Structure formats: structure tokens, C-alpha cells
Amino acid sequence: MNSIFVKIAAALCSLLFAVAGVSESVVGYTEGKPITAEKQEYDFDNSGLLIGGYYGAAGQAQYAKEAGLDFVISASVSQAMLDEYEENGVGVIAAGYNLPRYYGTVTEANAQQWLTFTGEGYKDHPALWGDDLIDEPNAPSFPALAGCVKAYRAVNPNKISLINLFPNYANDEQLGEEPTMTFAQKLPLLFTDVIDGNNEIFRKYTSDYINTIDTDYICVDIYPFNSTVDRSGNEVKSTSTCYIRNLDILAEACRETNRDFWVITQAAGETKNGSPEGSKPRYCDEVSDISQQAYACLSFGAKAIIHGLFSNMGWWDVDSHMIGSDGKPTETYYAAQKVDFDLKAFSAIYGHYTYSSTYMVNAARVAGRGRGPLMTTKAEDKAKIVSANGLLVGAFKGEKDGKAYVITNMEELNNQTTARASFFVPDGMVATVYQGGENKAFGGGHYIDLTLAPGEGVFITLQ
Image 1 (spheres, helix red, strand yellow):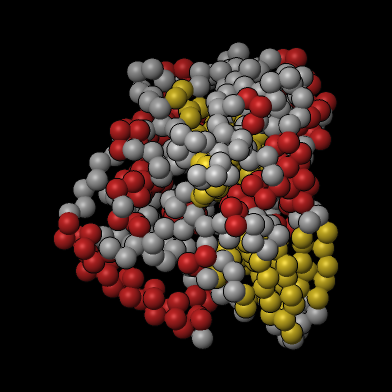
Image 2 (spheres, one colour):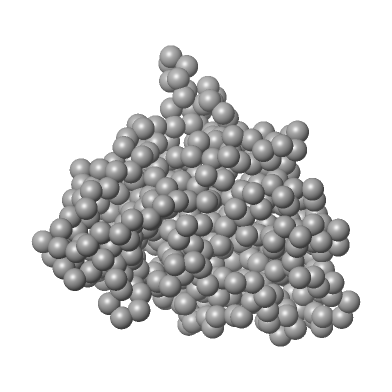
């Protein structure tokens, strides 16, 4: 019955977009032909789920290994650092080591080292996964970046040239895009947040990226968690209402153009106990903070979760990072470590399934949700799940009739709500539930009960 309602809602949504004369999908949203990416054969194994850290530094490779990181992104790379990380089995994506790394804007004039790259003098290393090209580029930089990626790949086909995009809360100046929808176009779509200023220009930004740059991934940093204090001085946590839509837009772009989805998640902040000066990014030093982000991203098919920030360098309060000002692990480190090793329990198996769609259960209770349905939802992917709580569900397809699901407790973390759900295992199938670093198998033909702590998620395979 729920699938019927989803199909009716989808048909109505499509009709309203048609009336507005606006593309429902981010694919084809702007002029140009989307590039269907061909998967690269990298020096590293990206067949499963990767876990990374942003940034990495010398002297911290053992901490990275013990936290469950597969790689770090670093702007302070040396031969000695690479040796250290190789010894600990952790890869490095280097910024400014072999080639310059840019921020915001790049042009053909100032990108000549990339555009004319021949590989001469390139300092390769077994720990070196690739080179960091640019962080948060604007859309006018995309043509030059496309040339950089092409030139780099021609020489280094087994290395990654990393581009990390802006999130959807960036403004038009940062994104380099302008809103163009008229009031008449917006009117039929008032029920959905896709018409909001930032989401409109972010859809253009994403569309221009997949039309222009041939990478087999899309990487973005999204920091959704903030907090303030109430009149009694108690911390009040909140989740940005643009969070789910940001994941939705990029997941659709990745799914439709054969790209992996990499997300740099929030593992740092400005305020530990809430800001009396208004809402500010909060510390993410509890397991629920790290877990809810990780499983939300997995619910949209993410193939890499990258903690921002790992090392004691970068932005916001250093002691909110995984490694604090004293060079030692913090509460954030141990929270991330716990989640990382829970994810490791199924990270290889996760790669055997292909992302198909995402939907919400009790959408009004889902933290980080804006208005309107998800663009990634497919009615036929819905499982039989009974719950009174706000859940985010990712659906995946495996070989033959195999399926998999990621179910995330997306209740607002400020409420400390434990979610309960019943998941139906079809006749003739066996469900394997991966939760808390362990797994348990269940036969088909009945519902199984799930209990999800605040921010917790589970991975379920059906064979």
C-alpha cells in the first residue's frame, strides 16, 4: 500500500515539475550532456566502503590506523610522512606535494602545471593514492578543472585527482551560479524545497559539474550539526534542514552518471556545549553524532566517509578534532573509532551491492529534512518496515535477486530518541543484520524487530 502512495506522489510531483517547466532531476538540469563516468582502476581498492580523515599529519599514522582509517587527505606531505603512513597501512591523498592545490577558483592560466602535466619528476610512493586538485571550486572553474583531470589521468591512470565540492548551503557567489527561476515557475513547486534559492543554484552547480568534469566520483563536505543554548543554559542541538536534500541531489547525480559518492562529514565544531551567541557548528564528540552522519550518507549510497577533521590542523576549535591541540586523541576520536569499526564489519560486503534509491519512513520526524519528496526515491524499492519513528532507508541491489538496506535512526539527536522498527524478511530469503560490529542471520517469512539507539544505523542483506 505504501508503494502505491509513493507512486501517486511521484506522479503528482512529476506533473507539477512539468507545469513549472523545470527539470525534476538534477541530471539535465542545465544545458549540456551529462558524462557517464568510466570507473578507474586505482592503486587502492575502492570496491567496498572507504573511511578517511581530513587532514592527516606526520606522527599520526598509528592513530589513523587505530581509528580504522583507510586514508587521509593531507597538505603537509613529505617522503618521511609517506613512509610512516605506508608502514601503518594508511593511504595519502596529497595536497601541494607534486602539484599545486587550489581553493575556490582556478583558470587555464594558473593551472598550467596540471594542464601540461607530463609526469616528469613525479614523486610516487606506495602510500600515495593521488593528488588533491581543488577544494570547493566555483562553477566557472569547471572547464579548466576538466582539462586538469584529463591531463593528470593520461599520465597517472591509477591515481585520483581529488575535487571536493561546495555543499548546498554555499551562496551564489561561492557556487558561481545565479538563480533564474521565475515566480511563475516556483508557484507550482512551493511544496518542495528544491525551489529554494540555495537548492536551485546547487542543482545548477551539480548539473554543470557532471556535464563538464569526468571523474568517477563526486566528493563534498557537508557539516549539518549546530547547537545553541536555551534560557536555562542547556545545549539545544539541531540539524540543518538542507542536509537531506544535499545528499539527495548528489546521490541522484552519482547514481545516474555511474560515480561513487564521497562525503566529508562533520567531526569538529566551534561550540562544545552550545553557543549563547546563536546557533554554531557543534562538537561531534558523541557516537551518535558520528554514527547518524555515516549511516545517513550510506543510506544515499556513499562509498567513502571522510571525517573532517582528523588531525590537529584546519578550522574550528582544534580540541574538537579527532586529534587535539596536545597531539592526542580526543572524545571525537573515540566516537569516530567506535563507528568506524562498526562500519568495518560490513565494508567489503557493502561493495557487493549497487545503490538504487532512498526513502523516508515517517518523514515529518526525519531530522535534516526540508520540504517535498526525495528525488532518489523509487517506489519499487520499498521494503516492509513498520515503525513510529523517523527513519532514512537506503535500498541496494545485489547479484541475482539479492537486496540490501541501510536503515538509519534519523530522529533529531537533541531528543535522544531510541527508534524501534519491524523489518519483514520475505519467504525463501535470509536476512543478515549488521549492527554494532556484529551480525546475525534471520530466516524468511516473518518480521524481525530492530532497536536503534539515537543516531544508530544497520546494514541488512537479503539473499
